[in-house]
Length: 117
Image (cartoon, rainbow, N blue to C red; front, side):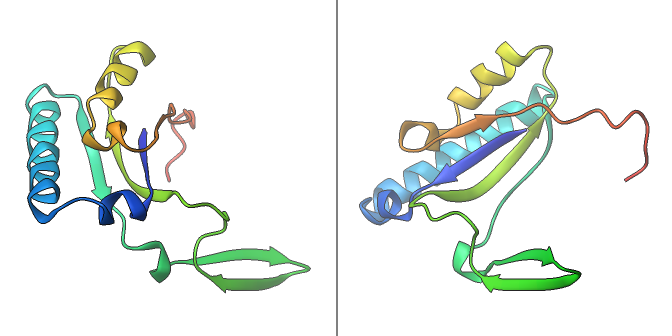
């Protein structure tokens, strides 16, 4: 899984033309990994201000608005890719347009041994 982290301040500093160019790059990147057969799934996530964090403590759900982490960056989206190796997944992650501005985490999915989820 390729987890894309974003800092909204970086996006706000871009002009409308630069934002449009970045979105076009995302379209081309996504088409490339779909065409190569490596793309499994992916989606951008809504603004973190629309999220909630849930923790169960003492049998009760504690719910707070927003993401858990106190950070300027937030999880902005993801791609699930099927690659021959972790090195190949890392190469693919380096081509995600936001990698120039933010962090892309490459993390293998856990094998659940055929357990249906």
